[in-house]
Length: 244
Length: 319
Image (tube, each protein chain N blue to C red):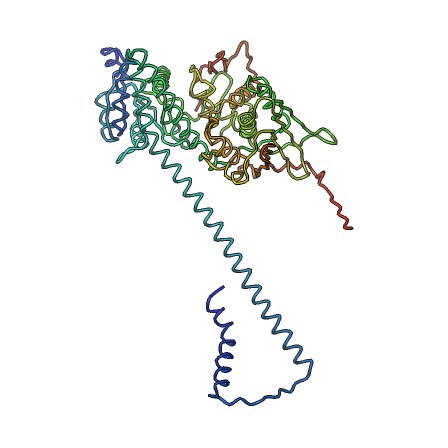
């Protein structure tokens, strides 16, 4: 896979969706954005193309006839294939999205989406993925410095001592630590953690980030974990590793 | 109540009528009968049978009433379910075309189009984003309806202060007078249990609504108080008021008042308030007078603080 990437230069994308109206428009867009794109319209062909085309990332629609996106994801992960996958989810249910992440998706994006947002997510996932290794989003325990987040019990520890956080602050920390080094806009955090993204919610994000910083003892000027990106959002800058 | 039981009840009356007809027509003899019995027994039989009859009627009536109520609730539930299913289908049917349209427009905008086509494209893009927003908002409403809110202590006074200050900071009031009235004596507003972020959104929507439907020079008053059991938040304005016929409908999704159709809005702001408050075991309501203004109210259960309830003891004296 690494070899192919070197030979052809641009990252390879496999776009899987049974709606041709979508794939016909997205393919030229993603090609212009600098990707080599291959399109298939069903789950079975997707499984074949993951082996044949060896993509750097798969954009996978959830709702497809016969073999749906979730099943494709499950089958790939079961045979130890960790090709990064972005799911095109169909409902706003945050529980369903969280489940998709635990099952091995690297990220998800809700339809209808801004094509530029999709391209940005693709780049971010490719950048943080380590070929052949499971993504952070599937790990049960993550460590960054002295901070450990246990995702199955939804608890966080600092120097092995449990820290007390509100349920939403835990969800926020979980999302941030599984998306390190990525610019996380307030809108995106609201959508992912809160499930809605009204302007007044920006304050909610700031309040929870402040709670996290206070509890983690993180300084705004010289942060170890959460950096403010002025006018845009936040970035988790700590080095994240598997702690299972 | 079962039909056969009703038939059984009416059977004696039916037989009596039948016999009377036969007697009057001369089919049967019509002798004069003198019944002899002591007064106590007759009084007892008359009283008990009268009571039994009335009790039967009462039972029958309350059973019918209960069944009617249950049926209404059932119909309401089915309608709600139908409604949610419809929203899910609408969402499902719109998301794919919208995704394709957005991608297509993005492709077009990367081509050199000239001034006219560019401005047309931008106009189309704006409208697509509007539909996009609508689909997302409808979906979020459905999600909020089906998920229980986080439960934490919420300082409502602090929250109201924040929202009101936020509106004053923004440049949208244009000479509208906005005031916040909070109780201090004998105690401040009690906390409530719930999701502070969602409640913030609800109050924000009420205030946004008040600003939207008033004119410069109008007054908007946000006030809150507790009555021992509940906390009530009111957002009152001196706007045009809401006609009696629309008062309940403003809480429905996508409903827009007849006289305010010119004012931009999604028709989802108030339904969102309703869903959020109902998810917090509260209720919403409004009162309004044409040309005078409107008071929107939300009522939420106050967090109980130990044994000190601070409830009213009402005393009523009739003249």
